[in-house]
Image (tube, rainbow, N blue to C red; front, side, top):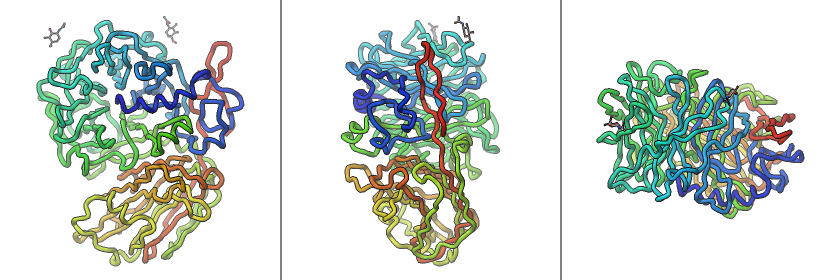
Length: 585
Ligand SMILES: *[C@@H]1O[C@H](CO)[C@@H](O)[C@H](O)[C@H]1NC(C)=O
Ligand SMILES: *[C@@H]1O[C@H](CO)[C@@H](O)[C@H](O)[C@H]1NC(C)=O
């Protein structure tokens, strides 16, 4: 993740000057998660409340160490030299929702990273100590891989890090573009005592991950064959490679191999900004990865999320035996708007991730900790949604909410036919938006809606007949999300692998002012949208359930919650110590 982040850094800088990122003033107490005293809350309607959102962030390494979660992200502390001084900012947490900031962990200091410390990943070594491999931009403007280790591993906060004297440990192979060699993954240890790691790269237009091996984590040798490559996909950023259990929902350590395990390769495709993955089998003795189905693909590959979701990383949470996926969500607003609001980008809510029982795809669900942010709850008894009905969910803060709804379809024989040429769900959702009447659907939720429906974001389903079965389309339609014209209002879509007649058709949406993260059928398809309403702001935002199909659908359950504000990087300086500031929520 390199040049693409640079413009964001520049924007943020105007705000940070003279204030210091980590300093807050008392008057900010009422503002949402904002780190400057220059702007009032009302000038910041799009700032989120329970999503991690520093002034600038770009995914680096999440991990857990001695029971503390660490998050490192790209940050620029020096406006004047913004393009050559990206550092690793550092925050810690005990619940992955509330975060405390620390001083930057890694900053440019050696010839191997003097032009920037870019993305990388943490690996927990067998003794329990972490090591981080990261990309440095060298004095020759070449992308190289470096190592840092904690100065004092007894300190659970890992405040200080020491660079290896051997840096750089990996340099671009011959014939590889020196500016296309980056983002080391978390390493894994084979039963042969050899470490492996993958690095994102490309050869001409073929996206790939190089495989490196090492006995000592310092001396790395490139394997002859990349672990995986796909023609026509461009550079792969932030590659991830990890095992998933085939017979249990629990997460497993990155180095685990053996029976009842499949492996996942994820690549962030720079060209499309999609996080694509494939599932396959991995033989650690030959270092061969054999994909089982599909491919990493610009058009039809499996994606973690079919909306805005990029540069994600997973890590194994050894304290809770789960694999956690975390991603960077960029803006869908114009650069001019980003400058005006003074920040850009945030983190999705961390998600647990596991292999679906079909074995064909992954399933994701917001970590349970986010449920602690739930406040006032509203429940509906089951009710029918007649054709054309729009029912308001009242009694919660719709701008900052969590809602779970389940549907039962009625009259499935009335479903329209899905033609076999209709293979692109995003295209289908754009053509068949929320205001296009169907038979079974569109039905779902209108979030961040204004009272007069001039603005709303529609997250909904449509059911089709398809080859003696049913096809379920899940859409997030942003076309009416804002009266403001300068945003990217692309409609997103995904097919949901669920039998709508025999299985529960559920939808969960986490709304936080300018982000809507939606999970279909318990997390089989996820769509994240950024939206910037001009009317449906704060108290003026409303939430509705709707059905615009000709057939009735039944809501079997609905629960919605107001979400409390999280404490994210809020710190006041006191006697030279950084103390987290308490607040009422
Ligand atoms: C290392 O960290 C531990 C725990 O925070 C602390 O007690 C100890 O004094 C530190 N050691 C050094 C050399 O700083
Ligand atoms: C690094 O590892 C390679 C392959 O195992 C070996 O041939 C080489 O001698 C090692 N170099 C050093 C400096 O240890």
